[in-house]
Image (cartoon, rainbow, N blue to C red):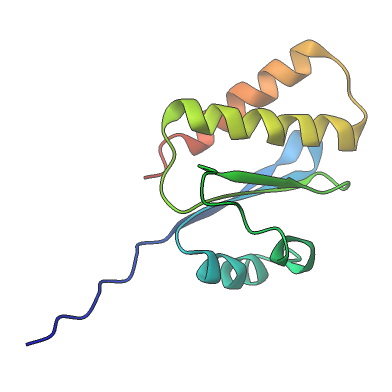
Length: 120
């Protein structure tokens, strides 16, 4: 009897960052489903479709000029890998909002980690 392969589990969340009027879409799961979920969450997937991460990448972050950010990984991230990606996200938000204040960066980074680190 042939067993069917179990589909990988998906975990995703849209995080509104109200103080900066920014958004984060964070997704763990298969690439093809990721693109579908992006559209469902109201994010434009067009500029991401051609930028599929290389096999050696643990995760990839995409930042837009309007403050919207997307983190993709095939599987849940370790805390240190999540922090790495959230640095990119926080930088993306700070660039979009033209903020160069270190304390704003630190508080935003801390808040993003707090709301995303429990995703498993």
